[in-house]
Image (cartoon, rainbow, N blue to C red; front, top):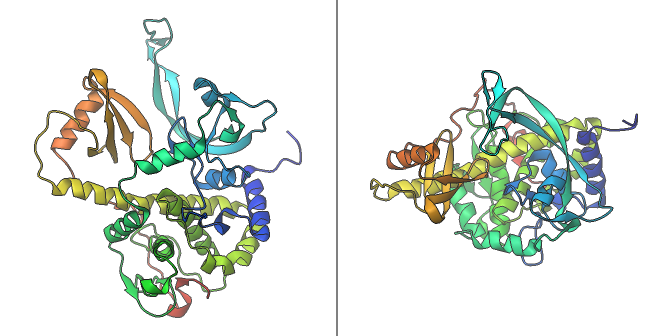
Length: 401
């Protein structure tokens, strides 16, 4: 390996610094000409999952319009090919499980075709793994990405504004409309915003509110981040960076965009933070992903409540659009296939699985459907000691205007 090789997190930080200075970072294009989100979270079309944290930012900065990324093996499996001379991009992920052969008396258990029977096992200690991925623009034979994105949007039952409103309502955050500033006050656990009519559009209003909801998530009774940084300090800038990355991800997920205009004043602070400590971007991206997961879970909670509000009738079968809390996650039944097969989706990991009515998982899901339990959000959060903040006007996370 070259002596000049830099860890991926340093490469990402340097590229983001250059993009911020040039005005071309993912933050700086909040909407497209048709008022949809200007940032589309990079995703893997072969798994149906979005890339997360720093990997999502890194891939978004590679200069491609297509948001889809995959490995050479994944492309080949779908009978697609990588263009000759295409350059791969490296990502890093945490591997917590591995595929290993099933053993009996120390020998592999073989299937009917003579190949070893494999199982997923949890690793004793998570490991960081690098992978090389190619963009959809580098793949031959793959369907047009605009078509794939349009199909995904068509499956959405609610408009972006409706989804934002549902998330905010389910969060039960305390929101006050007054004045000309938008901020979160940690002492009062209060989000304050100007009145909706003071914004240029409904999208900007909700994008702003979702940004402040990102700060709100840091309360000691939620994700428990340190919100004690005074305005103008590095700690303050770090928290703003976390909320900005989160609002970027959430805005992409519900296609409402994010309101960068009023955060532009923090760009110089972010550049200083990242130059002083390139690893801060890795930490900020990880926290932003936690914020995103926490806030998007409110949409899932709302959908589950709507299901629970209906008359519960014992069923002997899963049906399309069932939402079923089970084993610390929630599954959605996407479709019913022939021969009593179903496609289900893990709403936490976005992983899709094919199951049959004879499978144990099917039986467990049917039991959970007929005997629902309440889904709680964030009750496993470590609530640590509350820090007394010094002055309220230095503790609000707000826009500079």
